[in-house]
Image (cartoon, rainbow, N blue to C red; front, top):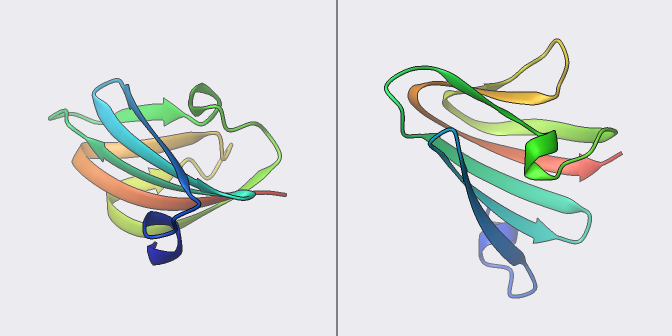
Length: 91
């Protein structure tokens, strides 16, 4: 995560969807996604709604109550107040 957060050339944007707080650090063709569900129930966030198109490779690097929908790889799934970190690359 350090190569993203402390990179002076990274661009950052923050999004809140379904009461999930999401930060995106963009460095070249890679994106670090840090997200926390602020709900006391499970929710999902579509990667498409985050502007992340089809044809990406996503790797989870932190699981504290979050996961990738492994059947479609198109959604991030969050448990109640769950958090996760993901690295997204264009394939």
